[in-house]
Image 1 (cartoon, helix red, strand yellow):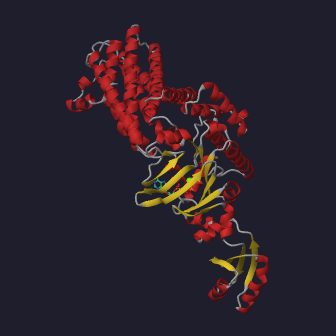
Image 2 (tube, rainbow over the protein chains, first blue to last red):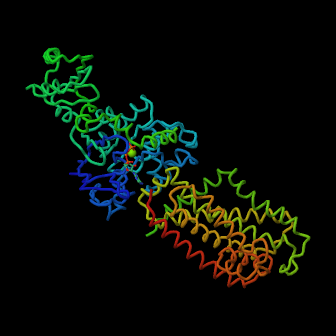
Length: 330
Length: 253
Ligand SMILES: Nc1ncnc2c1ncn2[C@@H]1O[C@H](COP(=O)(O)OP(=O)(O)OP(=O)(O)O)[C@@H](O)[C@H]1O
Ligand SMILES: [Mg+2]
């Protein structure tokens, strides 16, 4: 049973393709992550799935309804926490929730009960009756998450739910999200560019880059695909000979050069380090440092895109927007 | 089709924001009050052709109420831009509420707050020497206020739907709102103006609202009240339909 079925979804802005023929399905009750750098097309995808933006081509079904022809049914079934703040700061927290509940046609008694519940969930009961303009960034975010839940959506979209929050609040929100998914059986799609977030929360992760899904699997399987451990040799100078002979070794699953680092995926890395160092000595390649670690999603990202996510972000002209946005969130 | 609860809650939001923004309300009322005070006192002793014997302050009050409708309603229609800027528009647009109800809720809220401000101006002008001749003239003037307000909320929505952000706002104020104001005969009788300007006055919806209110409040008007009412009603219906259409066909984020 799928709550989301996306087929060849595409969005073009003039002749720029922001989302490029994405296809994927999300099961009911799944916690699915879209992981990608700034400008990858995450928000554009969410905007299309939540009926705010018309796709250029392709289609999708959300909670069984078509996002183009059954907009109202889709809207009834989903909750959205947008990336950018979307609160009325001249209303109190409770009034924001009441506005929302009434827009979703929840009757008075049920409304009061639900609002009380979600306020407790995000621990804002005491601050419920002050104006949102006096909330901190983290409180605003929690209120938005509470609002996304008031009407008990079947599918919840969270667009970078922890962007710009401190580590403690982030942990907190992660725990809510997990609990929600487990206890209330809400299907959740979240976008993030934090590796740890995707790793910690998601049942499956789709890595999105330049509008395309480059790979999709559970975090563990993604990491397994790299084939064991990651050894990083920092070379004084890149020697193609050496790199070539390393990649030809039987136990080496894949190699990747990044800056002056040779990144090698192998099984039982601790046993292979001596061999590699010996080879380097023979080829007269000076090694400055050696590092061995279990693969993280960062390594997966590097493997599939040839770049680290930070580089993607700083190379992207959009980083300016990010700045502006964080400022607004304060 | 329409969703009464959604209309109500959108109206309620406008009311709460209005009641909380006291300083903003004082700010928007200040300009018409200054116009009323300075022009009223300054020109009161002068005789202007076309006033048919009334003093200037009585002539001016309906015009200043019209001005208040024009400004507050245009701003209210264009407040969609602020909602877009502050992200709240997405919260409204993603809700399972048809676009017509959204426009109706906002319009009702805008009309209510504008008319309250118009009535405030009328009340204050009584302290400045304006004589109100009973309840019927008052109620008639409120009808004209509501029609004018609806018209300009619709016009504001049309502009807001065509604009991506709030940067063009001052252009609209200078090149749309002020000309509409000066051409409407709010400050001086249009009968005295050159005929090429009169043509513009005749297509300005505010002309008929101000003239209708003059007819109702001081019994002096260029057209008959019935005619003013009819034209105002047509303008209101046309503008709100066009406004709703523009809003519906614009990208929602
Ligand atoms: N309305 C628009 N008009 C033109 N281009 C747009 C528009 N919206 C988004 N884009 C472009 O589409 C691309 C994808 O943007 P999107 O916001 O979906 O990225 P994202 O993955 O959410 O990034 P971030 O992590 O910064 O939120 C970007 O290059 C962006 O500049
Ligand atoms: Mg985004």
